[in-house]
Image (cartoon, helix red, strand yellow):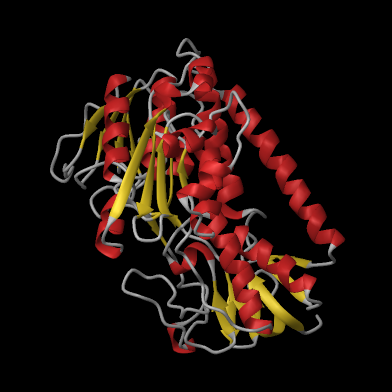
Length: 423
C-alpha cells in the first residue's frame, strides 16, 4: 500500500469530515473503520434516536407492543445515509480500509485482520466512544440496557427506569413515555439536563411530570431495590477503550477518565498524531466532532488555530424540545457582570397556537454594556431549529437593535425573536 499523508482511524462524523477536508487540500488520505461507516451518530445515536423521537411525537400511545415497523424505518434511513457517505468517499477517491486498527508507531498502523500495514505521515484518531456502565450495574442487553440496546428492542416494556437525566436519558424517557411506557427517571444531580439553563431544566421537569414521567432528582440508585422495573436503561455517560488501539509504551497520554489528551490544536503528546471527536471527551456532539475533524486537518497541514467551543449550539429532542447556545444566565452573571434577561413565552406566538405547542419560552441573555446577545436558551416548539438563528446572533455579536431590525415571515415561530426584543 502507498504511503499516505494522513491516515484516520474511525469513519464517524469526525473522521469522515476530516477525510473530506484533507482531500480538499490535495492530500492523500485513508479512512480505517472496524465497524460501520457513520460511527455512533448514524448507526446507534443521533439518527436512529431521532427517528424514534419523531415517531413518538406524531403517533398516539395506542400502539402494538411490537415495534418492528419502527426498526425497519430506522434501518432504511440509516442505509440511505450510509450509502450516500460511501458514494462521497468513492467520488473523492478516499481509501476506506475495513479492519481493526492498531497504532504500532507514530507513522504506522497495523490492520489486525490481515496483518497488513499502513504507512503515513500523520495520524488522526477519531474512534468515538461507547456507553458507560456502573460498577454495580452491568449491561446484559436483556434487562439492563445501554442506549444501543434500547434501539434493538422488538417490543416496548411496560415499565422502564432511566438512570441518568442527561440528554440521552431524557430523550429516551420522553419518546418511550409518549409510546405508552411507564417511565421513571433517576438523576443524581439536582436537576435534569444540568448543563442547560436552570429555568429550562425546571420547565422540562414540570413538562415531564405533567405527562406522567416520574422524575427523581438528587437521587442515588446505589443500594435501592430496582426489581419493580421491567427494564433499566443506563445513561450515565460514555467511555473509551484504548487498550487495543495502542500500547501505553507508544507514549500517547490519556486523562484520568481514560480519554485522549490533546492541546488547543488537537495535537496529542506525539507531534504527528492528532485526535478529534468523542475520544477526547469534551462536548460529545456530532457537529462538534465534525468541526474538530476539520480543524485537526487544518492544524496538521495549514496554519494552526485553536479550537473554539464558545458558540456551540446544543439541542435535546424531547417533548418539548430544548436548545441553547452561548452563556446561560448563571455563567453570564459571573463573566459579564451587568446582564439583561429577556424571556418571551410561546403563548404569544400565533404559529405556536396553530401547531398547538404553546408551552415554553425563549430566554435571551444580553450584555448590558455592549447590548450584544451573549447567550440564549429555548424550550418549546422547534427549539432545535430556532437555535441555529441564535447561534449566528451570538457568534457575530449581534445587538438587540440588529435583531429587532430583522424581518421574519408571518406567521412563524421565528417571530418570537423580534417580539422578545420589542416587549
